Image (tube, rainbow, N blue to C red; front, side):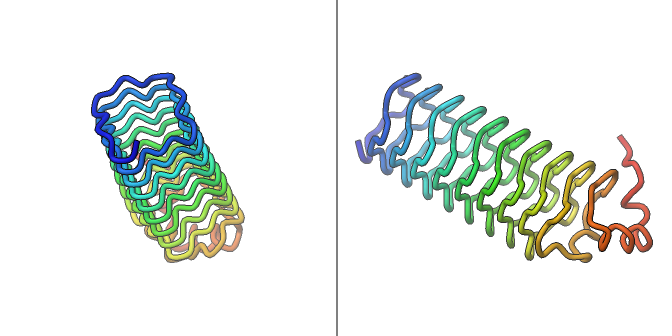
Length: 219
């Protein structure tokens, strides 16, 4: 079904395991609960599609357009999403464990309470994204842009943060213990570090030089 026009199609609950849907048009399609395990959706247009609870484990979505897509509780473990467009997509509660999102665009996306353990966000665009309560343990975030992102209560234990832009990010109650390649300069530019878990090497000097970062932010 490569290049097939399925705009607005009602495929909720369909069995499309390992289907070949490269460059398919699935704009506003209903794929709620659809089995797309291992499907090839490279370059497909899934803008505004409903993928709530869909099974996209190990799916190939490189360069796919998922702008504004509904992906709440979707299963995306080990999915390939390099260079995918996920601007303002809703991924709340989705499973993206070990997914590859290198260079993906997730500006303004909703990633609240998502499972992102070991996911690859290298050079990804996450400006203004909502990652509240997300589990990013051991995730790769090297050179990712998290400017203005909400990381409240986010688990970043042992995450890789080399060159990551955290300017204006909300790190209230986040856990950054054991984070790799994290720097004093990165942390000095965040919005808040109120009740944030940090290694002593950062906690002591930051409190001394930037005490305001540790004050409770105004509601």
